[in-house]
Length: 368
Image (tube, rainbow, N blue to C red):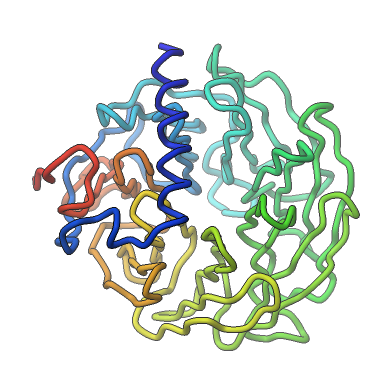
């Protein structure tokens, strides 16, 4: 089994490098067709009502979902579109977002370790070889530890404690499983959301939905070595929840405000593209496999799609009830969107899988 992970990881690394150094037209020989649903993956346990962030580890071909309904991390094989494990031990749904969990999730070491935020202000470390929680790290807050990002260079994880007042970010040593620093967003008036790490600059970038200085929200730059905010990029009429980076200088701010998305230059905050037809997002994701951004549009139960090469909005695909979480596998260009019960397409909830015709690396899409 490990050989599959190693081989796929190597090939995906080569694919990602190739796609960031050549134009999209050199990779996709025909104009992409429509994006369609190709599968619905059922969830083990109770009907899926509450869930949060999801993550794809393309090297191992696994998708991970923070399933609050079952108090678990749900594990899906992205090659077969089947659920293969359910890792329990989280607080589950409490009736309040601020105390429910799991929340944010990220893989730190492929096939070996996953970290997830929980509703009791802890971050849980999951051993992926045993599929169980092996450590719990308190961030010292009163409410949930939410979205997170991993810095492999310095072996530091950043998690957003969005529901505390004021909100703060926690920097944690992955090696020692200890808190290094608490960074308080004292000017925030509406929490702190999705962080993302950039290996090119060595910085974390985190969405802050609103501040006194920037009522439309801002992207804060956090230096994991200096353990401090080094820059703030104000936004207009955005209220960013999500953040995603494309190799180069692009950073997508997934605006929570309806129909709004903004792409900025991560080095100076200059707006590169401004969208008024796609947005209202929570989690957002950049897929190097097809050079597209995908936006979990919680405001409209859609997935928004933006072409990163041309900086144009491709459109929106209807998904289902509660859709706000999205992740893509660059190995096959499949997009994973959890949908809540009792959506007509998924009466007990499911993970819907989408693919774009002529971009699917496994061949022609199979509409269902």
